[in-house]
Image (cartoon, rainbow, N blue to C red; front, side, top):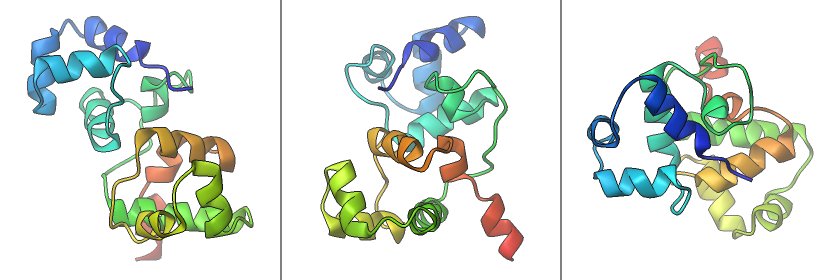
Length: 148
């Protein structure tokens, strides 16, 4: 289950107001407030922007890890898609079975893997659990850089 309480504590630890964070993320204060309260789920791209601003890991923001170390360098849907496919194949999971696990359609998995659409924060969280890796590892572009 996603845990958003760290979003508030990270903001407060850095002496920033909700309005200041909202401005940094380029959203309204009320949008940020709904994310912080867990009423709405923060989109992955904004979660990445939040974590990057503070130089911390997405997993730390979501309370998955105690380690604050940031493991990601950029947010690229194509890289995320390649990583999803890489770990799906490594775990011997078909697109159809992954679709069932995430409660989405198989064409949705294809669009994730091709980097055509942004995966929801909820689904990337589920993938990290399924693959037994961190969310940061799923969005990490280091493997892609090593191939170049």
